[in-house]
Length: 151
Ligand code: RB5
Image (spheres, rainbow, N blue to C red):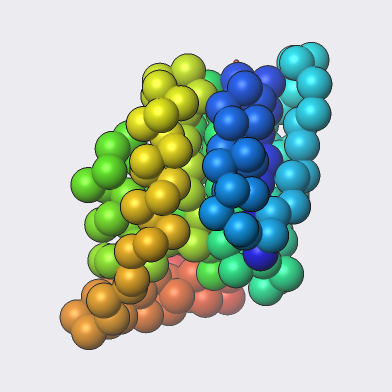
């Protein structure tokens, strides 16, 4: 299951990506926005990142104008590793090294075809584990320490 969400700045690209994901045979949940009215990106980042954080979805995709706001919000959620990606190399690294479970894209900075290729690379790439797991474990420890007020 892939959950996807955008603000008005990412709405057009979200429509394209939803179609591309369906064509890949993936089950998707489109959590909005669903019209061009101006909305606040934290509200949609919360829906998608919250679903991934709670384990309701394995992967999420977020799109706003630049991707910056969505990535800032998504990374507040425990267990979410959101990666703002602008090319196919970053998409591959985001999965292989960072095991990013949320992909963030900028609807106003990416061509639709480029974004489709980025999503495909991220979906197909495989997390390498090994030395990267030590680093992800440190991120999880930092989350726990911040939450407990230890740092
Ligand atoms: C909305 O105008 C815009 O600020 C938003 O889509 C996003 O780019 C924020 O980071």
